[in-house]
Length: 115
Image (cartoon, rainbow, N blue to C red; front, side):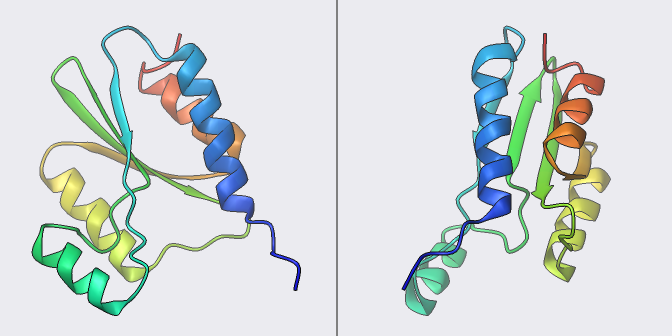
């Protein structure tokens, strides 16, 4: 059986490639690997602080924090992702859902994270 290509994974890789080349000095960023391999691993990770719906990428720069969720053009956010975004904003951060590479790069540029 041929493995299906993931448009979101391709978007993610393209954004990471841009970050590796264009992130401004002092920008700290990380990918949130919220994909447990099975239910037991998921329960264990939740006990250790994993949050359902956490954004794909988190950024810290100049005493500000940012969360970016990446979606394919026809993607949709889950209720957990919407709840995380709301909590992140309530905590004083900036959060956005980007549909496609161009919107992700435009968001990172608008946030002042890219050169």
